[in-house]
Image 1 (cartoon, one colour):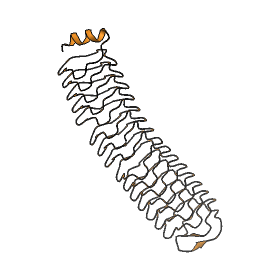
Image 2 (cartoon, rainbow, N blue to C red):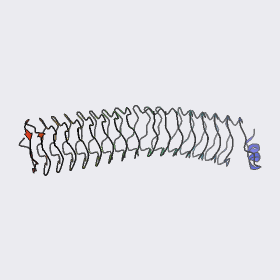
Image 3 (cartoon, helix red, strand yellow):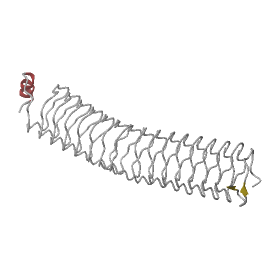
Image 4 (cartoon, one colour):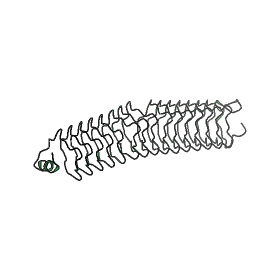
Length: 340
């Protein structure tokens, strides 16, 4: 069908163009909102800035098509083939992309807020800066994908594969990562406020300068993790395992680390003001210059720990095992504990 005929028929109210052949067509700036292009052939078509809001492109073939800044809000793209398509700046808010093919597609600046991406394969995709707020990524494959600076607040990640994903500078407020395998993932400078990381494997993960206020890390595994200068105020790390983790200059004010394992960890300059550290393991931990003012350390083990220059003013050290192996029985009122 010729483009002129298509536009004329659309102008008279026709919307059903299923299985239409528009290979290589130029529809730049066209207004085709609400059109039915189900199973249409649009390979190599140029749909730059075309308005297709609330349109049906289920099973459409859009191989290598140009969808630059297309408007496809609330669109239907189930099982569509967008292999090597250019979707830079595309508006796909609340669209249904279940099972869509996006291998080699350009996705810079795509707005996928509240979109349905169930089961989509985005392995190795460049999604830097993409808006995925409240999107459904259930069962999606995001292994090795670049999501740096992406907005993922409120995203659904049930059974989502995230091996090797890059999340530095990403917005991850209240995201549920519980019980996932995120070994070695880069979260540096990401915003994880109120995120759920309960029982998550975060071995060797990078949280440098991450915003982690009120994060739930209960029973999480953080062996060898980099948490330098991370903000963990009011976070819950109850029974978390942080063997050899680096928390240099991290802020754990009012955090709960009861029963956590911090053996051999680096805690130099770390702020533990009013933190709960009851029955916490700190064997051979480096606490030089750490601020433990008002911390609750009852029953904690500081055996062989380095407390040079640490501030323990007002800390509760009842039944705490001190660096020399002795047990402390009274509430401390110390500003320096280098004598242990």
